[in-house]
Length: 386
Ligand SMILES: Cc1ncc(COP(=O)(O)O)c(C=O)c1O
Image (tube, rainbow, N blue to C red; front, side, top):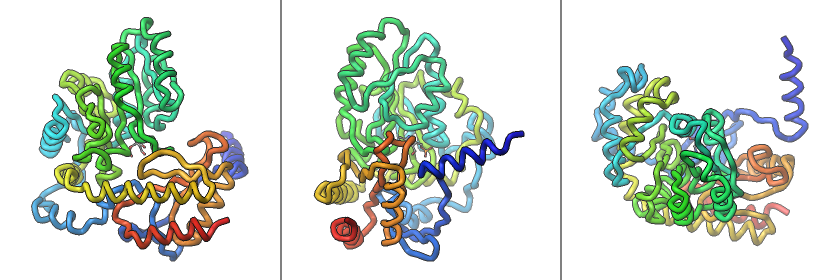
């Protein structure tokens, strides 16, 4: 056995400023405690601050007999784990999105590694945006289809790929996120819908970072851009703005049936706990009410971008995910340490997660953080760093 190989690989990661470690943290709402220090958590995906919303939790306990619920489904959905909360949650999703069908999964990762491999064959093509999330890439790798990538958000490049290759394949899947997890930019879905129609392709959209945060009812960018009905597969995740766990796809009934029969990450994994699915359903039914939080997070992110630009930093996007591009892996690590020393819990995002030379701090904003705390951050960025 060659253990040296692993030691060497870790050493190489350390030398490249790319070594990862788990942080030991305790949480108190939007505050995080690390090594006895209290920091503002600017690294969670709790975009609406719902994970620490006491009023919501109390309402949930008041209307749900939580003691009667179990903490495990102790079986896959295809065996005996398909408890009643799944049906209720899927019915609510169907009604809110006004679609034929919804199917709930254990996580966004399970959804993304399972749906595309189940639906595609070697006679098919998957064309994905260059920056789609690792879970989508893993799903494409598990599928038998051919894969091509188009330049990030470049519909002209996508068009040229489709013009050149569409005829050679039976089914073509265009795959994108709506808000990209590392750049925080938003896709023009109407252009993608027009292309998918022109080239008779399926459109697969991951709304992980938009669900709850965009659209009048918080249903995401497809709602905001009024094109839910034109998208074949909309995936949403509950582990971010919903402060829960799990994911879903909304689609036509035939695809739901097909996925239940073929999707390995659905079939061969223990179902979500009833207590968790009940909470997700409770949140889903309150999500349309949080417009004030959606407006607040937009205002704060616009202000943060303005300050970063004024300070000479490159940033990107237009959402509550705000990158502060530092350049090398090492410089992003140093900046993250400086921010943490000064009370702001942020983490560096480095190559290979982002392109070389584009290592960054990823500010992930939370609408529950008071404006005064954001003012401290703005003040530090303006006056506390060179
Ligand atoms: C775009 C995107 N899709 C899917 C996932 C995975 O979702 P989950 O955390 O529910 O597995 C993530 C996680 O960060 C993501 O950013």
